[in-house]
Amino acid sequence: MEENCEDERSMQRLRKATMDTVTRYSEDDNPFYHDERLLDVFCIIGRFSRTLGMKGVMEQLYERKQFYQLAEFYVRWGEVYAEEKDKERFNEVWNIAVSVGAKPLSRIDEAFR
Image (cartoon, rainbow, N blue to C red; front, side):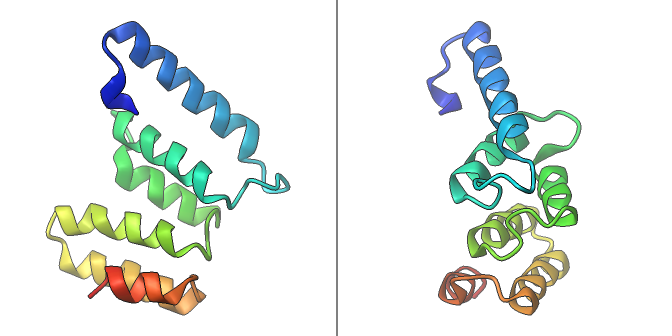
C-alpha cells in the first residue's frame, strides 16, 4: 500500500488513516481486535515507525495480547528476527506461538522450519 504513495502528502494521509483505524478498532472489546486485517494495518505502522519499528510494534501487540492466538502474528513477528539473523529470538517467538496454541498450527509449522 505504501509503495503506491507518490508524494509526502499521500504518505501523511496513509499514516493518518492507519492511526485512525488502529485507534478505532484496537479496544479489546471491539469485534475486530483480533482480526488479521487489523494486523496488516499494524504492520504498515511498524514499517513507518521511526521509534518503535516493526519489532517494537510486535512486542507491544504481544504484551497486550492482541492477536495472541493468531498464527500469522507470530509468523510476521518471527520474520523480523529472521531478517536480522537473530536465531535465538526467532526460536523464542516460535516457542511462544506453540505454547499459546496459535492457530492454525500448520501455518506456524510451515513458517518456522
